Image (tube, rainbow over all chains, first blue to last red; front, side, top):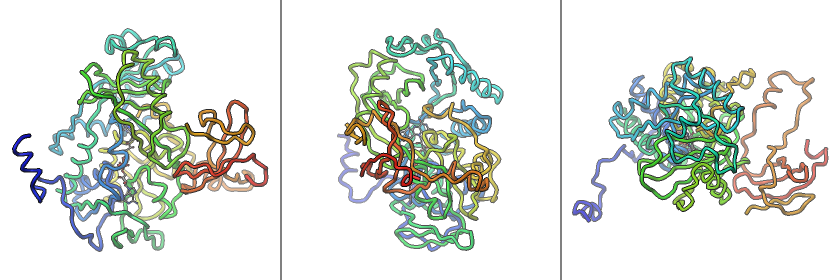
Length: 414
Length: 87
Ligand SMILES: Cc1cc2nc3c(=O)[nH]c(=O)nc-3n(C[C@H](O)[C@H](O)[C@H](O)COP(=O)(O)OP(=O)(O)OC[C@H]3O[C@@H](n4cnc5c(N)ncnc54)[C@H](O)[C@@H]3O)c2cc1C
C-alpha cells in the first residue's frame, strides 16, 4: 500500500480538497431554490452564477448528488433526434459537452465513439432515413449506412443475429455519438455551482411548496422553511410527487429503466450500438466493461428494483448480436426512475404557477441534455421567459394539443 | 418469477400479461370543453400507493382490473370489470 494512502486512511479529518462545501446551516431565504442535486439541477445552479450573476442559490438534494438518473444512466450522448425542436436542442447540448471538460476544468472522459442505431426491417430503415434527413438539414452529422459499413466498423457483430432475429439491413450512423463519465459531470457542475456561490445541501428533502395567490412563496424541508420566490424542480423521476405540491397536472408516469455491466475486458467495441427491434444497446466503457441496457420496464412502477427477467432478456439479445459473449459474466445490475411523457419530449420552463419552473419528462434520455437544461433553465429563471430552445417543451403544449413527437428517436435510443 | 392472478385463468407468470394503464373515468366528449378533454387525454394523477388499473391476459384475450401498489409492486386483488365500478 502506498504510504500516502495509509496515512490518509489513519487521518481523523478528511484532508483532500472537496468538490464543494457542505454548509452546516440552511439560510432562511434564497433568491432561487433548486430541488434535486442531479446534473440538471447542479448545471442550472452553475449557469445561474456563470451566465446571469445570480449567486444566492440553494440546491436541495434528498440523498446525495447523483443519487437519481445522473448516477444510474448509461451515459450516451447524441443529437440525432427526429424533430427539429429536439435535434436543435440536443445539438446545443452536445456543443456544450464538447467544451465542458475545458470550461469546467474537469476530466469528463468525454469519448466520441460513433453511434449506430441498427435497423432489422425496411420500416425502421425508413424512420432512420427520415431522421438522417432532418439531422443533415440542421447540420448534424448523421447518415444511413449499409450492412457492409456496419461490419467494417464492428467486425464482431453477427449481421444475421444467429438466425434468431430478422437480419440487420442497415443503420443510422451518427459519428459524434459519445459517452462520458456521468459521476464526473455531476461533480464538475457541483464544483462549478459551488465556486459560483451556490450552496449545495445534501440530505435535505423538500416536503412541500408554499404557493400564495398563484405564486411561489417558499419551500418546506425536513430542515425547516425557506423563503424564496423562485423554485426550479429538477427531480426527473420524482416529479410526480413535486407537481402535486403546487397543484400542477402533467402527463408524467414513472417506469423503472434497468441496466447492467459485464466484467471488464480488452477494448474491442469502439462504437455505441443500439438495436431498437431487439430492445438492446451496448457500449464499452473506458474501464473495459460492457455497459448494456434495454427498453423501459413494461409497466408503471415507482421503484428502483431490478429483475431477473430483465437480465435474462437483455443477455439473450446481446448474444443475438455478439454470440462470442456467451462466457462473459455480468457484474452489476441496477435501475433508475424514468418520468415518461406521451410524446417522448421533456417538459420544461415556466408554468401557470408564478415562480415555479419545471425541468422534467426526462424519461430515458436526459443525461445527454444536462448541459442544455442547466443553461436554458438558468436563462428562463433569470429572464422570466422560456429560452427559445425550450419553448416547444412548455407544459402548456398538452392543453394546446401541440405535441413534439420524438418517439422514433427516443424510445430505446437514450 | 412474478405471478399475477388472472380472474379467469388463475395465477400466471407476469410475462403473459400486458399493462393497460390506470382506470380513469372518461368525461362525455360532447359535454366538456377542450381544456377538460385535453386534461383527460393527457394528464395523469401522479398519485403513489394503490392504483386501480387495466391488465390484459394476452393468451386468453381477457381484460380485467387489478389493484396494485405502484411503489411496492404488490398486487392487492384482481377482478373482472363490472361496468359501474370501473367507470
Ligand atoms: C438505467 C438508465 C440508463 C439511462 N441511460 C441514459 C443514456 O444513456 N443517455 C441519456 O441521455 N439518458 C439516460 N438515462 C436518463 C437519465 O439518467 C436521466 O434522464 C437524467 O439523469 C435526469 O437527470 P436529472 O438531473 O434531471 O435528475 P436526477 O439525476 O434523477 O436527479 C434528481 C434528484 O432529485 C432528488 N430529489 C427527488 N425528490 C426530492 C425532494 N423532494 N427533495 C430533494 N431532492 C429530491 C433525487 O434524490 C435525485 O438525486 C438513463 C436512465 C436510466 C435509469
